[in-house]
Image (cartoon, rainbow, N blue to C red):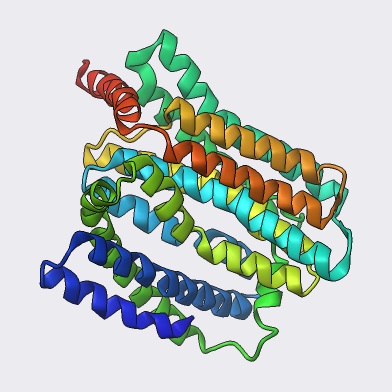
Length: 367
């Protein structure tokens, strides 16, 4: 995948030449993929040096760094709707594409797969809690629209506290239910890890470049969607969300081909939990600092998609077994939701977003 890094300078060159926005967007979108891969490899190298516990924690946390960078850049450009769409897309990609493709590949190669039921019980419960974190602001907005921003901030703080507790449990000896410490050990099987300083430098440079490329993506998104006849919602959920989650999908497929079903859950379900516990709250607080109307009150269509994906994924893995057909079901559900978002008119979404952002603005303006 590293050969695709040529797309990075090409994206900057096309933007500098003020080229066709569709070409700029496609080149920037292609540039994100190898950057995510580079960041994932660097994170695994750092994790391998720090031991399985701390390394696994770092690996699980930093694997979602691309989603945060893409979201933060879009938020700085005033595109809170794109941020929410990207988060929704990343969650759907992790739970439906990553887990579905892994179940399919693992089932075809090794037959029915088994998971640790003890881990599944807690992970399944946390997955439902994460889904309901988007339901509560959407429901309470009906009765208290002016309090959406405050409610989202309070929920964000609670989620960060849960994340800190999860970190505490991980470091001090209990097995983490939402994070995979084995992922750090797995990362070193392909060869000796790179020196720590080199991994840190590569991670930092890749993060900065990803931020710049994400800025190009944000600027080119709306004109590209208009020229291709795609809605902004579809572009954010399927394109941006899909690219942001490509690292987890590729890692999950690699673990599935190796027969490491437990690591598949850590990368897909665990990464989704991490995204809700850490990335979403950080973006809400970033919006508060930047003066942007970022909250957890997603549109009804996004909330329904997240809840359905969480319920279906939890239902399929709850018995501790999986097969290739269940993987096909998850992939099929993603296609159905993608078709739904493709036919969803922008004006319907924009009307709901205007109401949500208007409520947030009213709340911030009130004494």
